[in-house]
Length: 335
Image 1 (cartoon, rainbow, N blue to C red):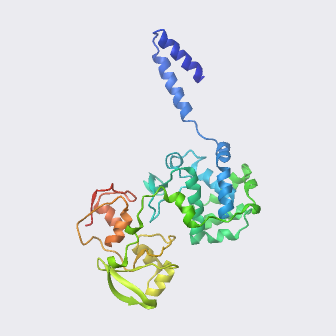
Image 2: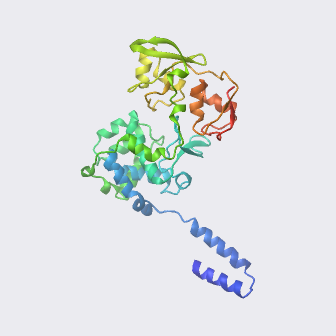
Image 3: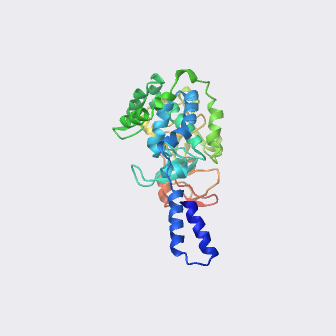
């Protein structure tokens, strides 16, 4: 049909015939062809090998990965998948320093992660499940027990839809995705340092601006276990050590875990990294100076930690949506 219209279109031009209607028909058909959606079968064929590869390295059933990708991305046709290569609906969360894409979800214009290609999305999905404590029980299930995995994901809070497990199981069984699950395919996973480079290539990030030096702050005391305590913008902070988490720090300083995460604009599922600034008190509403010139290597989060300012207020002072990042050289308000 398309070839026929193109031939007729060319004939009309060569013979100087009026072709308004033909032009309209041509572009309408062209638009229909170009917007053709990927079918579920095409999605499975395209991404099954990636799902199996992730299963080999991270012990997540390929059937679960594929079913989640199908469900979350609408067979790869959602805006997040086509524009942001995000197949699993993973949101930015505090501390994400890669590219971003915005879409309406539970709230209007929420921040989602944007990847260079779909493969990065599948890899980050593996990181997402293996690095968060709340998903640790999933790995107690057999690799072929996709029903327990589906129910476990819902129980751990991956999705708010109460029918999420039923939807995943239905997709798996209707498309026989369980045939890609196997106990005999495991390989030793790459080190996190090596694997994460694949994602971090998309991230312009200088750790010096998030993991600042102890000499940048005023030391005020030494707490138990020889922990140095510093002050910034009138608030106490420490530097995380290897093995630190919210529970350990909360217990050491006599506060609640939720306070540590909230004071540092983090979610309860975020992990702490050695050298990371951790505030022990609620950050200030404004900075000690009026402005800060934004650098290419910085994020709004790193600036909020640098000056001891609540992140939501830093966005408010600059009339920005949460998740937005200023351009390098832009002067942002700190009060």
